[in-house]
View 1 (tube, rainbow, N blue to C red):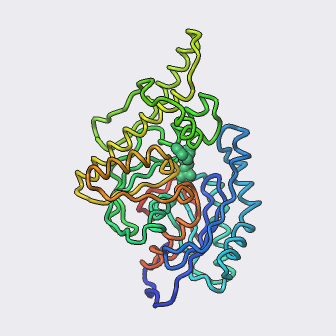
View 2 (tube, rainbow, N blue to C red):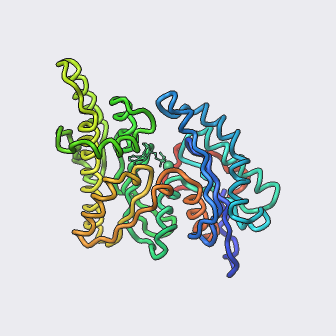
View 3 (tube, rainbow, N blue to C red):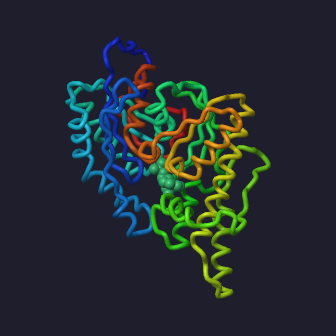
Amino acid sequence: MTDTNIKQPTEQDVYILAIESSCDETAAAVVKNGREVLSNVISSQIAIHTLYGGVVPELASRKHIEKINQVIEEALKEAGVTLKDITAIAVTYGPGLVGALLVGVSAAKAISFATGIPLIGVHHIEGHISANYIENKELEPPFVCLVASGGHSHLVVVKDYGEYEIIGRTRDDAAGEAFDKVARAIGLGYPGGPKIDKLSKEGNPDAIHFPRAVIAENEYDFSFSGLKSAVLNYLNGCQMKGEEVNAADVAASFQKAVIDVLVDHSVHAVKEYKFDKFAIAGGVASNSSLRNALAEECKKKGIDFYHPSPIYCTDNAAMIGVAGYYEYLKGVRDGYDLNAVPNLKLGER
Ligand code: KG4
Ligand code: ZN
């Protein structure tokens, strides 16, 4: 439930307590006036999920429950504030794993109910995009943003704060999902992205030619499942022929195939839509080769390139606090009927 008939904030400072638990990080942060991160506490569950080769939803929910109160307390303490200083509580309510989301949403509602502090539900992808505002104080919409994470690969026109148009999306696997699946196939384990990023530095990106999918109906859409299958076929072929696999070459060649498509679509979109600003977001945005390739291409084309530090690319609550701040300014408030929405669409409430 959204009430937009609320007074605009006065000149006073706005402190947002933000909570994020959509996947496998239990996170809380305090953000001042939208762009100043006073604390950013992240409790990662990677060690547990690594044992199973990927995120186990039931385990994720249980771990969130164990950690959430402690993480929120730490975020307040590190920021040097108490709940009395908090203007609003922002919480991720979708998309994500329903059991995981519910832990953050329930915690936020409980604090809001006990204290009367206003509650604001935030879209996880809006959070990822907003991470760009933290270290780029001059960045303002409109701009194009590539969101590449474990669950999403979107090309988004950020028209204004909280106003988005998705111009391209993946038809099958997300970019991060492809990184994770290929990493598992070459024995690197979970999460695959950072491991492929590292191993690729020792390999030849031109050693094996893997396909770059082109989607005829929409030039900005992505498809990564064919690429994933091509890598698996290559690995099977080597095994059948008794040939040794050079894992670094496979990692580097796969990564190059992903990067080529992401860079090509992004730069094309920025030019076609006549923008001069481009930003990246999501876990895959921390990939060092992707960042270098985009920086180089944007420089050539005269596009200003923005990216968050790696800690603000992967899941965190600071980004939710930033997005929550702009929702707060618009007067968005949620009631205690706020629920987890696992398939929440960007720009919808
Ligand atoms: O944004 P995120 O933390 O969670 C989701 O919202 O999905 O993204 C996680 C994804 C995982 O698939 C992970 O393998 C990928 O981001 N990732 C990377 C890198 N770091 C994380 N992919 C490529 N290179 C990296 N350095
Ligand atoms: Zn995420």
